[in-house]
Length: 189
Image 1 (cartoon, rainbow, N blue to C red):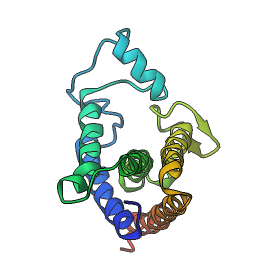
Image 2: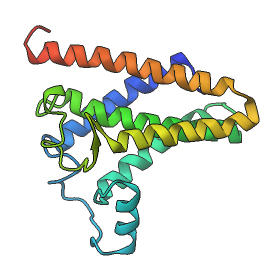
Image 3: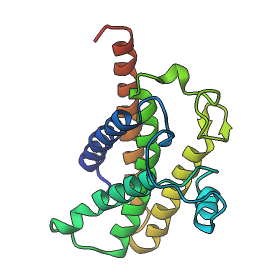
Image 4: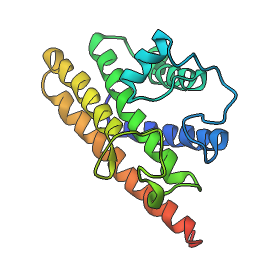
């Protein structure tokens, strides 16, 4: 499933998802002001979620958005792609890759943020950073790489090459998005 056309498609799709989220959330990230379901902070489910999500609050909005993205990534199986364990590993690997991508695109395209405000002092929901990068992004990339690496046992090392190419495609298109959004902010596009 990792291929250049699929990577370009996922990039376009999750750019639209990020833009949709910007329309829904505006300047207030992590569903801060949305009237969505929120479990009590001391509930077991909220504690488990916060543990795995870097201290973030569980919201109904995020349950729906994360479920939607998983359903989207499974769509090829409804359109003739044969399900295999390797393809499922690729789906979960892609899920963690696009989660990082989608989140960063939210900042790039959000008129209240952009690259200049992609900093811990402006983004309260990313609680830990290593330099200019939220640790959630590094964790997402690591988990994605682990899922792809597990697939090596079944199909060989070439899956890591295809994962790497997907990462490069995402990186290149993200760079182009950064440039376009910067030009738009300056009124040049």
